[in-house]
Length: 241
Image 1 (tube, rainbow, N blue to C red):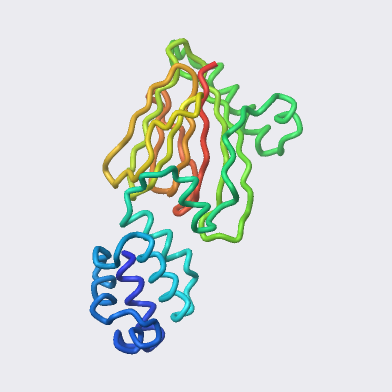
Image 2: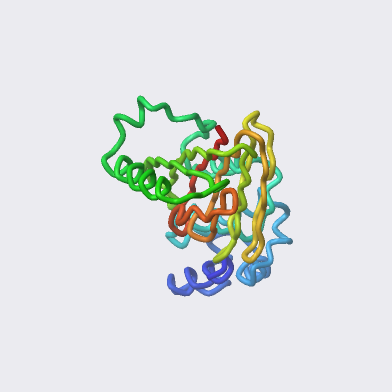
């Protein structure tokens, strides 16, 4: 369901006409009709559009973050890092650059992480992979009160040719923020369904994926499997050591 359709459904669920909503929000009914038709060009800019969405959400009893998240995914093409957009809408805790996870930390990790590590080691040790990468992944999720939980994963890719990461929006649109080991921004914006982005770096690729359930990720040509659920915000780091 698009953002405009969700606004219209929330209004009808509240048993309000467009004119009723216009009176209690002080937003012209013509502009409300445009917004329900997914036309936000007449809002006066992204800042005013977000303000209208917060106003509408408050009057309809809807969590404003639902409207704002859809606005970022469907309407805007971010020109600033995803971390700033998330902090602006209070979706996540303040962003911290991914750090490499030491073996000491892994040693005291969860039982699930240990099982995953052992299974991956056994599987790859029995295959003559040649240049196939070995991916060792650990994950930890920090629950928040937002609509989009955030997960951080760090992976190590063993190989002599650096790291090649491809993000494919196979099932849905997603926004993406990518940097290298020096913090240089490789990409910041939306990846629409059916399209992909590819990053080749000698040492490291850091990713923040805004709709983990909608994308697939290939590392050195190998699909790493599911990285999260629909609407989940996931941080990923792939190192070539």
